[in-house]
Image (cartoon, rainbow, N blue to C red; front, side, top):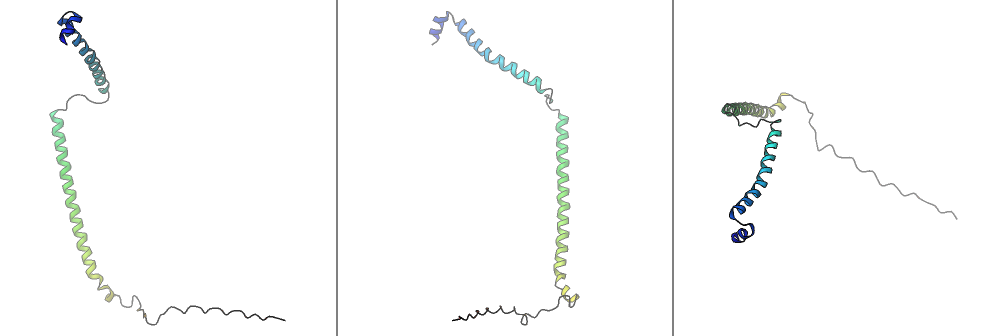
Length: 131
């Protein structure tokens, strides 16, 4: 393949030059487009690398947020424990409430109260045929 290229173009230097021009034809537009993109992006965001101070602040913020979430969880667990204890107390005293309020609900005797009888079937009308 190389011999054919050398015969057609005349020397190896010309072949190498042709390879490099093809490479430049692809790299140069990419590099220019990339540079233009960075230039336009620099108007909207900071392109520089973050500083070590930024990392330390982020770690500290994350640590504070974790501590706050732990405090919130502890507070919520304590509230749940108090509400469960209060609920248990109310359940225990709920049975005693019937004795504390006498005759609050009148007793119902289920034997005496029956549903009414269904209505009787209507009589058929009597029709006399006249002759």
